[in-house]
Length: 165
Length: 198
Image 1 (cartoon, rainbow over the protein chains, first blue to last red):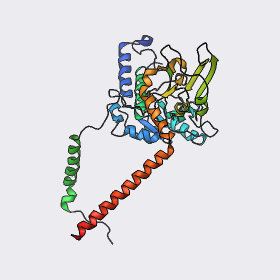
Image 2 (tube, rainbow over the protein chains, first blue to last red):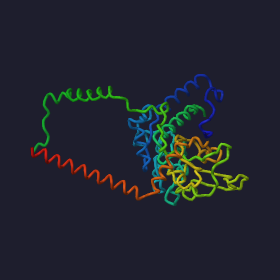
Image 3 (cartoon, rainbow over the protein chains, first blue to last red):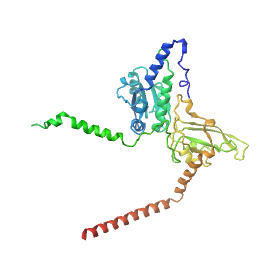
Image 4 (cartoon, each protein chain N blue to C red):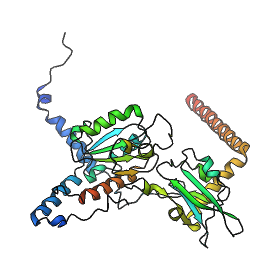
């Protein structure tokens, strides 16, 4: 696991008082259990993403079933599929329009590293235009693998310190 | 000219429609559960599952790979990097560095098909999300798995290869199936027409 996931516990971190840390826990609890994904479905991974929201895998169990098709209402961007340079500008705009705090899942190998499209037309990893929190390998990854990534994002949110400056 | 119909008083109440909708919901409550509880219920896997490729390790801890480079050549995504070196063992060559970039790997299984030494197989490991790209570049230390883990997969892959040994057998079997189907259809038609006459 990366260093981001294994950040120190927020409990009493930075000499904060009891009330602040409790409030932080409450905020983190609320944030992690109501992630609203922005489905940036660009190719075949999007089909798997739809399956993930469907009844078989049921993302609603983790409070992340509310797919919003406007970035203004989302806080989790799932980039599912091949991101070409032509699309890159739109993806960046969508990301910029999302309100803070926001997280990004690079779903599938195409968005994570360019995958098998090692050519001039495809972005070789969306981390060249967006900050990515978690990479999901697979072509496409099974819905379970993406749910696993979502759980890891939730773990990461738990360790954030929204009130710290 | 009016294209819409005026609703009847009963319809304007919308109560029957609501009751019908609720009935559907009520029936769904008693239907058997469809959702798989993922983190508790893991993915069902079979030997056919193509997870991430892993390397075979013998009992003495040495890799089965002889670093011939065929998988590297077969890989359509250029995910595999091999640096070969010499060894004192009988096979004389072994990989000094064997890296698979899992963020390139598309799980096609070509490496497994290309390998002449039964050294690389698709495992059943699939949920490997991680926060950095470096975590996804697996070296020999994270790729090697004991040979026993691949027993089922090896058998399955051998089965695939058997199928291609005699391609005419495949055609013959398909032809037999087709003639059998045609014969059965003819019989049914004959029986049907006979039933119509009597």
